[in-house]
Image (cartoon, rainbow, N blue to C red; front, side, top):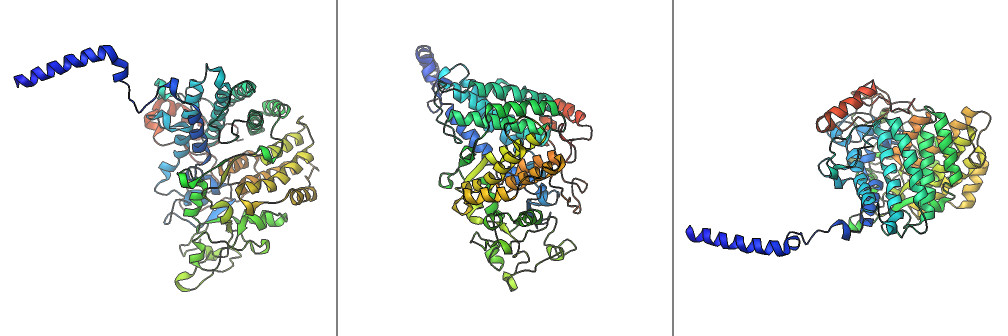
Length: 538
């Protein structure tokens, strides 16, 4: 024992001597790096992929709330009951917080969320003129990420958000109106910061650091923010919509923001991953297919396919029949349980396909074309020229000064909605000639403002639906009210037979950030539930 104490003493003395001489070197983890040697471009790359390729985070609810998609799932079968029927599954409490955790990051692991990553990258580059453009892009990304959250949940942490590294683990929930006012100012400042002398950006998955395109992206995002406020603050909406148009929004489909994924590296298209998993249960809705058919829309014979006969063929991504005439959307709210809501009892039920063990009752309903939507190395849309032009069409219809007439912007938006599908694969290609001709033959109804708003927002719904931009489809539906949808009133649903207007906060917030959570809930009035409305949703 005495010898052991002597050895410990000698070792301790040696260590103290060595530490005095090379303390920093010895106590630095060689597998880690400090801020001075870390390239924040990597944080931007990770954040963009994490935000853009969310998969289940967005499909579990909003993919079917706006009724572009439908499913026969039910509580007894799987999680898609949350989306199609507003019926909870065992994982619902987990699911309702996934979007929140993805965009923020978990409270005890600030670096895990997309928002935390761009916030950290912006902090690391705040005083570096050579990374001024990277800093600006990260600030724009922050607005993109948190706008999605506030539009889904309502009042959220903003002024104190994303500061877990600094020890802020219980941020206050800002009022949505204050958040929007701040986002407008932050976005304007970030766009103004972008310049040809602001340094190269190597980690950008959207535009490879193209500053000119990022300026257009920023103004297009500004326009989206502005149009959210049409019913609650038209004056502010007009001011910022006109500012966005004057600054320069997207000018063509070449400006579309999307990311390319690569399944072989583990960076796959999560939307396609979800669709591959649920390929049998996921169909285009009757509402959606009927809309395309009624308008003789060229997309009908491009984005939809009827699988080959039989259960086996319906459970694989083997190509189906794309002929427009045979496409049939599935009504929302039905199941395969054999009761009164079984799909076989749906009005106009076409009959099943296959026999015996290979029989399926939903074989004749159209699903998203697998060559376009099931490619796990495919592209994912973020924000498009088609959306921007349709928003400008609405702004112009309201009498705001946005550069062209409502009819002209609408025509551009319709043509772009068709042409941009090529981003999803070669089978989605619709030529500019066909797209332009279709748009010209289906002009905007300008007989009244209501007629214009209806047509514009129905087209916006179909466009974002075809792009698999689930959250945006639902958000603009609840803002505009178009198309007019019939809610599903399935047994034991969580929204009283109405289409959900918001997602409740993550259940863990009531424990981790109790005081601020309670304060936010007290401002909602109708409670933290699926039928409450966010500030701008009047």
